[in-house]
Each structure stands twice: as C-alpha cells, then as structure tokens.
Length: 126
Image (tube, rainbow, N blue to C red; front, side, top):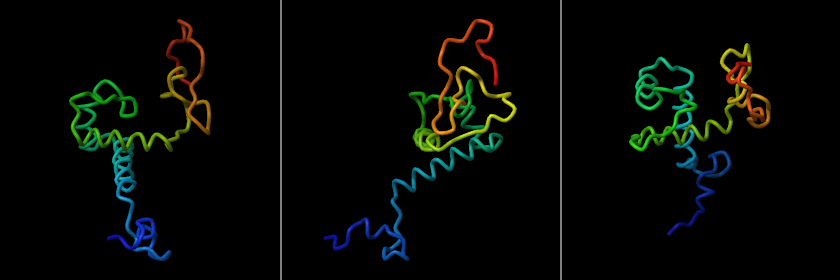
C-alpha cells in the first residue's frame, strides 16, 4: 500500500520529498550525456568503436540505426533524440555547413532553405 504519492517522494529534500529521481528522465539524461561525449571527443575509444561500427559513412548526427544494432547503440540513439531537441550550433566560418541540407537559418527552430539547388551549386558550404 502506497501512503504517499510518487510525485511527493520525487521532490527535492528541501521541498519536503525524499529526493528520488525520476528514473526514466535520469536515464534519458545519461544517454544524452553519452551522445554529447561522442560528439565532443570523436577520438575517444568509445567514439571510434561506435563510429566504425554504426556510422562508417556518415557523422554521428546523420547516422541511421541498422536492424542489427546492439541494445547499447539503440539506447544511445534514444539519447540523440533528446540531445537534438536542445542542440544548437554557431555558423562560424561556414566551412562545414552545407547550404541545402543543414538547418542553419533560424535561432528558434532548425530550418533549412527551401527550394531546389541548381546544378552548379548543389552542395556549396555557407
């Protein structure tokens, strides 16, 4: 029998709860943290192994999930979804931003240019 609501137990201690964490949100945050480390340190052993196995022909942000993916990689891909919600980037010098395929136009929500690229400038960089 539960005498106290779960929402009360998960409040911080200073607010009258016991400080339990929402396990699902905490797990999602840890998976997003792993993804962030893969992005920021691509020469780490974990990044090299995962990139070599699952993202051989693309970047971490553009890779797809193969049907033979491990449980760990599937979990990390769930963390990518959370990370992509709040992920932003700066144009900088524009050497790595493709005009027609990367979302670079808006600060509020990722927006890519609309319209077909011409044959001469199919994949220019910003």
